[in-house]
Length: 306
Image 1 (spheres, rainbow, N blue to C red):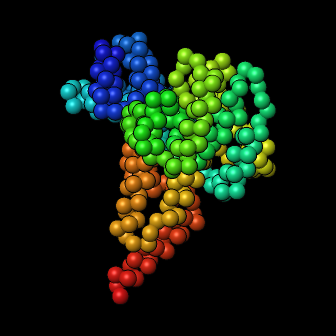
Image 2: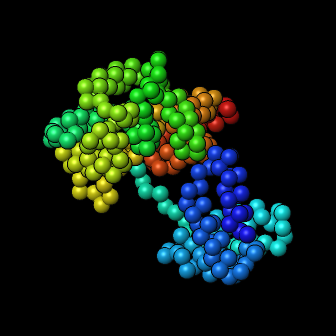
Image 3: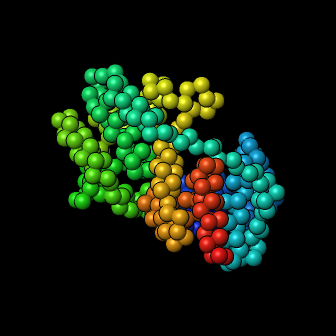
């Protein structure tokens, strides 16, 4: 049955480091659909009908067919009776939102606004938490989920954070600037006075781990109080702190070819990217930075020809 093949395929892919949570749900749903049609193999007709009936947008249909195509190729290597649907006919280009690059003054105002949040009895750490979170995200470029998943034991000797099993199931060590590490230790000393059974660094109401929705809501309040990004059609995101960090690092790249390559690899590793092409996105997303790097390249070519 196809459901057994789905379980085998997902298990194999997850052993390679992929999470595939949505993909697993989609393939399981297709396997049930195929079983109702008494299909023992993947059929293009069934794939097209299923993806159409379960998708509200062309992008959703493209993604589901793409997942089915990968699965079908996997099975076809063992049994040529499986048919591979062509998902490219529903290709829908994705435009990533242009990141908001915060200025140093804006980050300072956001930290000040976080420190002046209204006190709440259910969450006595509220001000300290958001000051530390914003400062940590801005100074390390961590993903929001990585920061929220930090445990007390993840602060290691030498001012290093242990980021465990995050995106792409990768773990890494993230060194911090001494000033950031000192601020984190000060925060943890305050947190200890309100410690409960949970060992997450950042707690919400009732001593529970902070959820991303709670953080987003507070962040919008902080932006408004700090007067950052107001009046824009699309408000700045907290994830833009990661883009800002990467941009500031790349701005400090040396003009020497070998140094640029080294800095890119170091930044890609520090950010936890699975491939360096994901780091190049920060160049594409910031025209000014792309222009600066292009200027460096022109100088390098000029030096080589001279």
